[in-house]
Structure formats: structure tokens, C-alpha cells
Image (cartoon, rainbow, N blue to C red; front, top):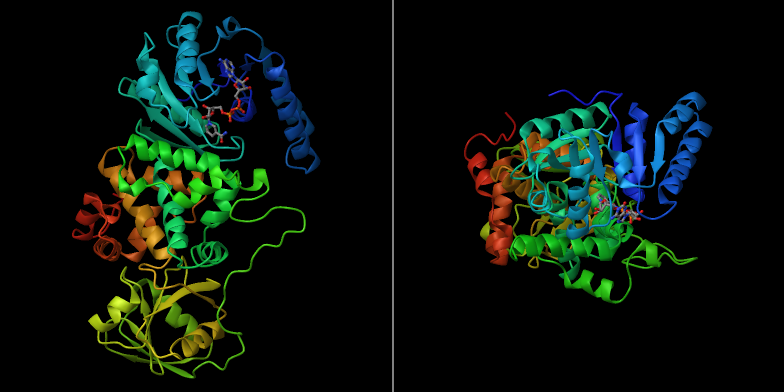
Length: 507
Ligand code: NAI
């Protein structure tokens, strides 16, 4: 199905943060846009806000004055719902309340033409349930933008039980024409992004609660090793703990208490204490005047002489690039057959497999065992997480730290956390994505697109799993499940299946 043509009138209801943004996107493409808000003057105010944003773009040379004027000329505030009659698509972005949304859609059905598409920007209300108030539920779908709508690329096109696939296809094509990355999702709790992103916060919170490291260190690892723009704690502070906790609660409740979505008592306490993050001046971090951001814990001075020679036994898989990096920084590498270990003096360095170092050391007959974390790119990462077995000699870490420092990699020590930080988070993100694909919520490609463009992940979780090896991800999850004795880490049946059948999610 093709996109709605530029001359098609679009209506947006609700001129708040999202509605104004969506109106701007549609008007920028070229549609005449009608903007309605029940609060008197709110639609006009929304357009004034859009104008201010466009003026900034003009002053930065990113938009020319004529284009700015043309966009604004296409935006019309209206003060009654009846004025939306000419619209062929109405996007609702009002208060997140099922009954109020249903009343608005019901009225719209009697105002707009029979073929008008009605869409909701809801983040959390079932599209299927909203449609029950409608006489033409086939013409209704979710059109879920991300904040700020003019900047964030992703749009989830959400189909309820009754949504006509042609309507979903038209919305997908239209959002694509508007310059967005559109994905299809089945109406299920959290749709794609708000469900698949839960482990990013949950694993960080669990690591913090278990004393693996402090928030500044965990954030630094997710950024400097994982390649995420922000770590989980700074991101939760930005989103607001009230909002982030409410989303986790609603997804947890909607999935009948599935441990995969278990909310955190640490975050609950922040909400109870009014430490909502940046907006209240304090969350995990203090945003008050003069407050200093805590530094991540970093081992070593960077000045210790590195070992001149290491022995690499077998392939380290995804971490082979680390060996190359060490070699190119002047470390002599002696290669031997083996199962993927680096010997540095008496210390043995290898990648985590989801078990604690303390558990793995006796199992593999290695005393001075150091495990390292996943990096998005071992050839460029600036920090790496490590952990050391309880049985290890006191000086086990020193040569490992000097070695990594010599290649420009800072080292952060985690208490013996199984799967460390980046590896376990990515494994859980991929697992959730695999489950969503298994359940027909979205395709593998759309799961990846959603996370790259909805929350700016550096890599789609399923592509990431393919890169590090789906069999390896499955092993990590299985070890986490055994180690914790918790259902939370159970591998998705699809991930398990792919682990045994070539490890490729994408056709
Ligand atoms: P907001 O509070 O900034 O704006 C809502 C606007 O809707 C207000 O101007 C209000 O006067 C108006 N309104 C309320 N009831 C109305 C009615 N019956 N008829 C007409 N106008 C009415 O809210 P925001 O943040 O823009 O959210 C709107 C919707 O978008 C909600 O469903 C929310 O869940 C969803 N959403 C919000 C995101 C966000 O980050 N803020 C992201 C994605 C979706």
C-alpha cells in the first residue's frame, strides 16, 4: 500500500510534547495539518513552540527561511473536534487514559469519513482494547512515535486484533515517507521498544544491588565498552524514575509477573524518596549546583610496565580483535593450540561465559583466573570490565591491568558478577528480542531497527547476538539461569533453536 499523498489532510489531537512533534513531522513532509487540543489556546501554543524550534534550525543554517514559513503555513490550530472532518488520518496524542481516548475516537468516527485512519500514539494501552469502542476497528492502529518526535527516527506501527493489514501498511509507508524508520508490531504489552529495552535497566539495577560495581562504573562500562550512548543509570535519571519504574511495573504486571521484567526495589525507593532523576535534581546522581559526577572506578595507573610477551591459546572468538590490538601495541604474542585463553605470567585471562570466575576456576583447573567482559569493538573500546576468582593470588590482576593499559584500555573491576555487565545485558536484550520474534510481535529485522532507532542502541540485539555467536549467548544465558536458579534467565526457545541451527536470526 502506498503512503498518504502530500495533499492529504492530517489531524493531530493533543498539542503537548508528542502531538506538537508529530504535527511538525507531518507538516514538514508537506501535509496540511489540523491541530486540536481540548485546553483553550494549547494548539496555538503548540504551533508557537514548533515555530521556535524551526527558528533555531534556521539560525543554525539547517533549514532555510522559506521552508520554515512553508511548514508553519501548513499548520492550522482548530478549536473543535468537528473541524477535523477533512482529515484522512488522525493521530491522537492526548492523556494516557483508555476511557478518554476511547471517547475521542468514538466521536471521531462520526465526524470523519468512513475511510479515515484513526491512530493512537499510546505507549502502553492495548490497541486491541482501544478499538473495542469503534465501529470500524479495522481502520484503527497504533502509531507510536518516540520523544522528541521530530528527532527520534523510530515509529512503531502497532496492529490490534482487528487492524486491517492494509491500514498498517499505509501507516508504515506514510511514516517512511515522513523520513521515519517504521516497524510493524503486534499489540502486546510494551510493543517492541518498551519491552525489549527492559533488560538494559534491569541487569544494571541487579548488578548494582548485588554490589558488582557502583553506578558510575557500570555506566562507564556500558558506554566505553558496550558502545551505548548512555549507561542505564544516567539514562534512567534522564527519563525520570517515576516514568521508567511505571513502564517496568506495567510490563511486569501485563506479563503476569514474569521474572524477566521484575521491577527493582532500588528504583522503587528512589521514586518513594522523590529522587526522580534530573528533573528533581537527584536520582542515582546529584544534579544540584556544584555537584560533581563520581568517577568510574579504574584499576592501575596506566604507567605500570606491561608484560613484554603473552601466550594466546586458541581463538578468543569475538575477542580475537583484542589480541590483534595488543600485538599492534608492541606486545609479543606467542600462539598455541587451546580453548581461548591469554596467559600473562601466572594469570589467565579469558572471556566470561556467564559463570562466576570463582566457580569457573576450579572447574577448569585454573587458579589465577581473570574474566573479561564483552566490548562492542575490541579494537577501539576504551574500557573493559574484568573480574577475578576468589582463589586467585593477590597479584593476579596487576599484569592483566598493565597489559590492557598498554593498549589504551582502562580497566574496571567488578565483583565476581556472572556474565559481567555488557555481556549479560546484551545476552538478555537478545533473548528478549528473540522471544518477541518467536511470539510474532515483530520480525527479527524490525526488532533490531526498533532498538537502534527507538533507543539508539549501537547495534540491534539480534545482529549483535549473531556477531558474538548465538551459541555463545545461549551458553551465557544457560549459565546465568543455573547460577541464579531463576526463570528470569531462561533462554527463549527461538534463541535456543538458533543456537543449534547456524545462529542466524535474519533471513
Ligand atoms: P502531554 O501532557 O505533553 O500532552 C497531552 C495534551 O493532550 C495536552 O495538551 C492536553 O491538553 C491534551 N488533551 C488531554 N485530553 C484531551 C482530550 N480529551 N482532547 C484533546 N486534547 C486533550 O502528553 P505527551 O507526553 O505529549 O503524551 C501524549 C501521548 O503520547 C500519551 O498517550 C503518551 O503515553 C504518548 N507518548 C508519550 C511519550 C513521551 O515521551 N512523552 C512518548 C511516546 C508516546
